[in-house]
Image (cartoon, rainbow, N blue to C red):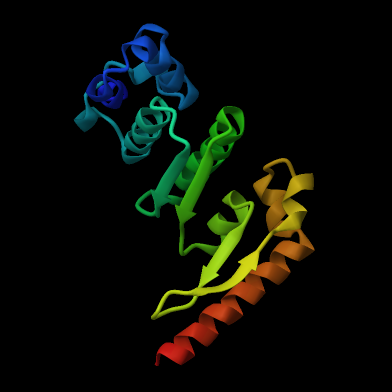
Length: 164
């Protein structure tokens, strides 16, 4: 499954150079590399999808609510894994999320869109994150996080009132 895109595009050099094994290891699936999709959990399937995409060396990775169907623990693990891989691979990610914590944890820049029609309402740059090194608990306790969370919730309420 991870090699699928490389085979479709005919990228035999990446196949020969071990890109598939590299990304299977990067998403921590080496112990189930030979498993069939129906044998994998939802989180494992999500990691396969990330490895398959990254093996193709995209300039931009588009993700629409990628962790929405996962239980909270798996979601947090996947978010941390995504941050780790993105930093290592220096890949740009455009991630759509309705989850404030996820947006502030994963996003270097958060674009808050208005409802109907969806237009850019505000650009948020959570500057406090640079000093936290990906520590979720420290982020949740940071005063600027709490302020941004409240600010975004107020904008969401305002958008809800406008839509009604």
